[in-house]
Length: 274
Picture (tube, one colour):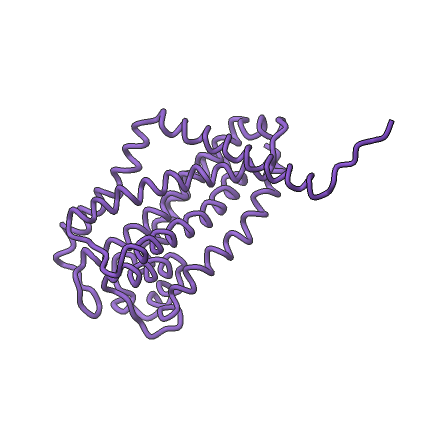
């Protein structure tokens, strides 16, 4: 009796299909858990709305935009960026809790794709992020924000925000597999400065020299600046290389993060021991 030989190409296709199916299974599990916690859903959606109202309507009248322009329109891309960055803390916490409670070990003991398990988390996170951006955009439209350079450019700007979120999620997954939940809670003390030492709320041109350099080379600033340009909102400009090439950096920074932390996350998952 002859042995059946499976072509390498067929094995490769089966592995890819296996990873995709497992990615969706894990993503669906995370989304179901998300929907079963309405309080957390409400908090995730309410925080950016409250922030827009506070910064836009309360502090907005006292804020200036370098080069002129409406502060609400300057603010909204920054709020999109801050919301994207803050979501990584939730990812870090959820991954760390799953690992600490033994959920990740059960995944590893099951016949599941190792890449699919960690990729599923990123898919669920992108779905949540898309909803957060939608709610925040509707809130911005209500209080006076608008995009002026066409629908397709606006969609490209939102795609850049999701691209940044996708890359940051892999950092969150890797760190979540690395630290305990208690340490994961401390991530907020690092995320807050990341979003403030940027062009999110204040033009870098109005900052001290050293802080301006930090702000302009902040990966979040690149995405926010590129989004402002695509939206046709004020606050675009600057004489530094980073400021003049924000669209290029908005693509390259996340690509670097994905290239580094995707394989690190998969490797850490394979060698996880708690």
